[in-house]
Length: 480
Image (cartoon, rainbow, N blue to C red; front, side):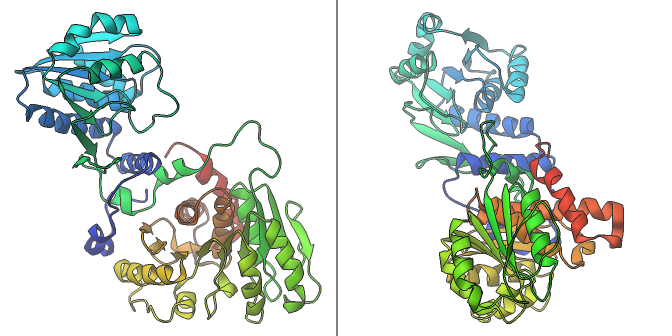
């Protein structure tokens, strides 16, 4: 992420835009990764979780505790808790000793070997049967077998382990969320609840990890299958050009670099870019005579990007095509009053002037650095439109009317013409595979990061085409 502390203009409204309620495993992994990018290691978070979990266990005044641990970070949480229980409580850690552990879990297990706890590994159901006395005499059992990464049917020996715990008279305390099939008398949720009925425990995740975009958001991008075919990466249609010929091609290249397999440019202007498919529209600008053809093209595209270089006279066409788009990004000259009401999932990418045109009832604050005021206006407009708005500025604001995210990546050198077109293209490509809000958040973050990289090399001499070539490195590397 851009820096380790929030800009002062975000501090007044930070808590107002923090997410609440049930969090999905995917979102929680993104927040964890953002926290680590801010300097809070996974091991630190695990230690905080373990200490809090141990405190909950101690509230029952147990004499004996059995901690059941898997191989992942959830198991590491349980092991950390066991270490905090070593004084005054007879503690046994029963852990799965088959398969590879997460690095943090392995470190916690190594530390436990020097603690005053009893370690009992198991690899089979036969091993578990020999451990039956520990289940029978425990006052409290800690369920740290499976965390948010659980997928598929429960296998042995974990199924037997859970059955033995359920048959015990002990109170069961679940770490973060119960393992599938496990009864839980108490659920200690770390940071946010994953299921109803959880008791939330703060483990020190920085607020910025949740309200700002970051490298953790990249974990939401679906993995590419080795069996993929041409077109699986998405088909994008760009409608634009006429008065300004380069804009739709920059958007198209942005979409290609962001992973779209097929990008078509429907425009009256041709530029010799062999990677892009040119759909020629007769004349020197897009008019109503092109509507039928554009609708046919839009209906076959996974996502449509509209407005780049379009000019002020073609707005009626965008309004006619919009309802026929599955997903759409409206940028530049498509952002004129009245607001285009479009596809099932729509992203608008206005700067301040364009926002004033499409949302006159929600004026922005005069101070462009007032991210709180900008977020309030954008959220209201997004709610009214039933769409996602990516409001560009010194701090970008992304909102779907309910959620708000801030993006602080970027560089002043990105004020050069064409960078917004690249952003629209990246958004369109991501929209092929992601919901609108997530696509807009990732696109803003990645395009800003690419701009920072280019600015380090080119300074004020940045070109939008320089930005295009940096997109894949920022989007698809997995080392935040």
